[in-house]
Each structure stands twice: as C-alpha cells, then as structure tokens.
Length: 341
Image (tube, rainbow, N blue to C red; front, side, top):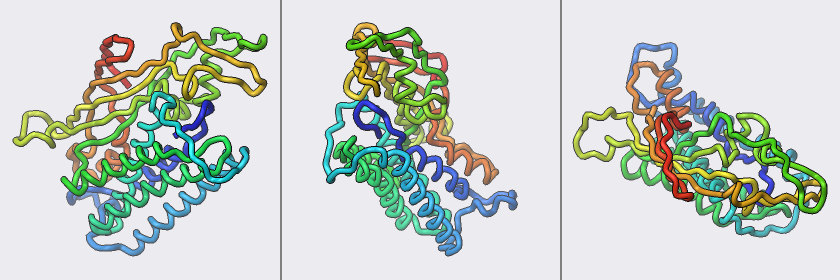
C-alpha cells in the first residue's frame, strides 16, 4: 500500500470503512421476530430498488474517494508517463499483506451487499471479484503515473491473491472457512530520545519519524503503522473436521505476521525536508519479523436471533479478537503474550 520511504494515505482502508457501512444493510441468517430490522434480510429475488441504490452508493463513494485522494496527494507530485516500480522488498512485505487483506475484505463485503439486493450467488461472486480487483487496481494505476511512485506488479499479484482467496472458497464451499484479519497495538513505545543527523546539527527521534510515516492518532496508526499492525490468517477449526467436535463452531485458529523497527521502506535511513540525513543503529533498532499463533472468533458463526447483531458481527468480522498469543521472531526469541491485540 505504500511506496518508497514516505508513506502515503492508502485508498484501501478508507474504502473498507465505506463498504463496511454499506454492509450494515446486509444479513445472512434465518427468520426471527425482530420485524423492525426486516430490511436487513437479503431479498429472495432481485430487488431493483436495493440493487440500484447499492450501485449508486458504491459508485459515488468510489468516485469521491478517488477524486479526493488525487487532490490531497497525487496532485502534489509531478505526473509522468506510465511506469513501473519494484517495491517487493519494502517494509518487510507488511504492505503486501495489507494488499491481500484489503482485496479479500472488499470482495467479501461487496459479495454481501450484492446478495442483500437479491442477486444470485454466482452473479454476486463475480461482481465481488470485479469490485475487489477494480478498487485495488485503481490505486496502482494512479501510482503508475506519479513520478514519486510507480505501478507495482507485486502489488497486483497480492491483490489477486486476496480476491482469489475469497472466490475460491465461495466456489468450493459456499462459505469462508479462512479469513484475513487485522489487529493493531493500542500504543507503540516510540522514543523521544534525540537522533542527530549525519550531515548537520539537526535532530529527530523515532517518535517523530513514526509520526511522519504513520500519523499522529490511533486511527491513523491502526490503518498504517507497520510496527503496530499484525495481519492474520484466521482458520475455522470445525469447518475442516470431518465430524462435529466438542469445539464451538465459532472458534478459529489464527496465524499472524508482523514486523518491528520499520522506519523506512528498505532501511532505517531517511532524509528530511531540509536535507538532514538520519540513520538508525542496526544493533539498537534491528528490523525483524514476528510470527504469531493465537485463537480467534469467527463472529459470523455465532448463533443469534437478532438480525441486527448478525449484521453487526459480519460487518466487524475483519478485526482479530484479542486473545493469548505465542510469538516467534527472527531474532530467535519466543514470547508469550497473555492478551495480544
């Protein structure tokens, strides 16, 4: 989602929140007595009012976000001929996991919206594939015309993986047994200790650098702080067991991936707007990868008679539930986290 050493605000998370809002109009579930929320029930046949309202809402949101992103970001930099850029080695591939996650979630949510309008499963599936591919591809095309960045074939590959993860499961099982999820630390311990530039008397700090890259608020950090984010593959246990087990249907096994000490795309070296050059000591700030094993909950499998609750559970099912976790990292250490978020 990000190119070079400076991070730009990505379009994908914004679209995810927009689609999540739209998803509040969607529901998978059985009849109940809560008639006040009957609108949440998917239509049995194509409902033209729902269909065209959804198409219009998604279209307006998509256009507005792209126009806003262009004026807020791309317009500030020179536009050149379409070109490519190899960013596969950046950010310990944390941005690539973000592409997989975003493409999967966009496909999942758009599928739910399509089904709510009464579209058949087959038509909804291919519509979701198209939406996920379009939303992710738009950003790559805009990058391709910017002198600051470039079109990334590796991004396209990971976008495709995310869309395919959703589509293959729908085709094979008509359900999502494996989901991509995300969590983010509430507070990352960045230091205020001064770091002196190598070519001047200017100073910076890891806190200042993180603010420049990842933003100042928790919401910004939740969307793009690679030192705080953990990307998860959440697998439903009972869905892969031949016979019913004593385990609850909603219990998932989650495998996570994260990184630490990322203060630049390829390395922890940067130049500020005044030309001051900074470099972090690799012993004090080693860039390393983290792998996690934890438990999770598939909220869509929790049985409830409330249409509203089922819709809400499905809408936030992309967030990893806090739970105990074991961390294995590339520094050779194993850590137990009593509660990890």
